[in-house]
Structure formats: structure tokens, C-alpha cells
Image 1 (cartoon, rainbow over the protein chains, first blue to last red):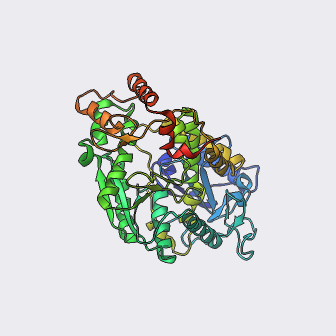
Image 2 (image 1 turned 90 degrees about the horizontal axis):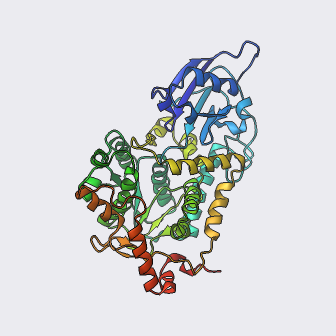
Image 3 (image 1 turned 120 degrees about the vertical axis):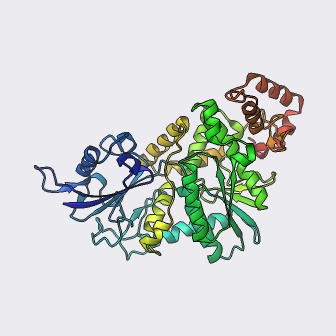
Length: 99
Length: 366
């Protein structure tokens, strides 16, 4: 399934300073649907090159990292349980850097 | 191009906006937990800042106001919103952008480029003051001399003065900064942790330094960082191409980050996740602190050397500068027992209560 991932607010520094990634992610073999929970671990394994603790804490994003799925706050769509679909756009923005 | 441009993907979650009840919600407001759509969001976001400005009498018609602009998210959004509100509600303000160039290659030179773009986009005149011209030293040169430890002390002390001096050069009546609710909550905690009663009593004031030459105010005092960060992403009054223009610079300073503040910051974010109102409540707690009249407060005077406000004979910047110029860069770093003792003596000699009355916190009492 094709997804567009955007990293902003300094998070792009964790993935070779590339802001926008067009990626192909498949759901886990035993699951039919791709959830945000799985996407986060996929991003951790495949895109994050350094300091993963700036992005993740436990099994979710670090507090202070905002997530938008198709321009919508992920707090409205169920956060980790949000089911992703083909062509979805997921934006991660850190609020932890200077003002 | 932003990733979202032309995206045909549909939003997840079908809840309607609790304000207009017509459009799909796009954001959960941390302040109220309301689920609202993007259109209602930018309306309430801008209206709340307008209310804060009006209710607190932050500006008077005809004033010249400098916006402390770092090129970061807060000051970039502040410059945009303030110039919008100034036009929309006819505040009658003359707005300027004021930036400080610390002389950090690969960090500040890049973020200053962002501010220069903002100058053109919003049509606000920009003034840049540099550490080099004010103090004779760039941060690069200071770090070369003193190393990566303590360099934030120099930078912080110098920046505060540099903004005041730049504001004086611009002949403005006020200086506004982009400090948001999260920043202020963080500062309340830090001042408690440091036992810095004088700063604790003034860090929550929306306007400070009214007795000084240039008062400072914080129109984002009640604005959550989450909303400031999300604002450029959701503001659909403009196309995404425009958003790209509301660009801000978000690289961390290349010299050592402030670790102590970092912990406080992370703690605030952890609290926010559990209970978003905690941020406003910490600010409220800071506001409601009452400082005992028996507490000795540093007496505000002027630096004998440069005239800047100082509770000591020399202001911190002059002490640090003297150290640099004499090749004793440790001077003024950390707690200097002798100076503290002298200050205590001074406070004891001058009548304690009188010195408290001259402070902003002097009116606070049990």
C-alpha cells in the first residue's frame, strides 16, 4: 500500500534530512489491515537513522510529536488504532524544537 | 510542495465539528478538548489571541511594536497572526521584525534567511542586530574560546540585551515575543526548581518591564504549542503553496542544547498527554503564588558600565564580556559566592521592605 509520509519540525533530521517519503508498506502477514501502530514500527525500522528516542517513546510517538492523517489530527481517528488506506498522507511534526 | 497537496485521500473518523456542526472535525483542541474543523479552528485561534490582546490592553493605537523574530515556529506564526489582526481589527500599530544574529554558522545564518523571507511576505521591516556588532564576539568565537560547556549562558544573557538594544534602535514602544503557554508553564517549573523567586513572580506576567525602557509582552501566553504548530498546516484560507511560505526553521542549535530545560519540557509534554489542561493550570499556579514580604528580592538598579538594568554593580553581560576580553571566560559562570554575599549585604543595608515595594511582586502579599 502506498503512503506519503512527511516529517517536520526537526524530525526530518532523524531520517537523512529528507522531509517527504513516498513508501510502500504492507500490513503484517497475520493482519489484514495496516494500523498506525504497525506504521510507527515500520518507520522506526526503515526510515529513522538516528536518535529514535526523539520520535518514539514506548510503542507510540514521543509526547510533543503531532500526527496528522490526511490533514486530520490523529487524536480524532483513534491514534495507534487508526487504520490506514492506500494513498494516505501521514504527517509527523515535532513541537520540541526551538521557537 | 507539501505532502498534502492535491491529496485525494479522505480523512479518517467521521465526527463533526462541535462548533459549526457542519464540517468534519480536524483537530482536538488541547485547551478545551473540543473537536473542531479547520475553518472553526483558525477562527477561534485568531479570535482568542485578539481577545487576549484587547482584554490585557497589550497595545495602544499608534504604537511601534517590534516582533522578536527568530525564524522559528512561534515567532513566525506570531508575526503572521499579529499583522493579520492589526489589519483586520485596525489596531493602528506599526509592526517591525527584530532578529538577533548570534553568529552561529550553519544555524542562525539559515534561520535568518527564513526571517528575511517573512520580511517580504508580510511586508514588515526587519532589523537584525548581531552579537558581533554589540559585543565584539560571535557565538562561534565564544565557543572556540570556552568550549561547549556554559556557552548557553553567554548566548542567553546576550540575547536578552540584544533584543532590548535592537528595540531601542528601532525606537519601538513595545517588544512582543512568541512565548507560548507551554513555554511559560515550563518556565514556572524551572523557576520553582531553581528557587528563583524573583523570576517566578514575573514569569507569568503577560507584560513585563513596564518600568523599564521597553516593555515586553507575550500575546501567545494562553496559546498551546500544539495549536501554533498545527496552525500553518491547517490554515486553508491559503493554498498549501502559501503555507510553504509560512515556513519556519526548526533545527536545534548546533551548540549544546539546554538539558535542564529539556527535562522540564518533556515533563510538561508528558503531563499534557495525560491532562492537557495541566499547562494552563501550571500557569495559573505561577500567577497565584504569593511571595512573602520577608523574602529578600534582588534590587533592580542599572549597570555602572553600560546602563542596562541590573541587580548588581555590573550587569551579567558586562561581567561575561569582561571575562572574555581578559581571557578569563569562567568569570560570571555559575554561582559566584562573593558577588552573592555582597548582594545580600547590600539588600540588608537598604531597607528590605522598600526594595520589595519597588518590584513588580511587591504588591503581592498574604
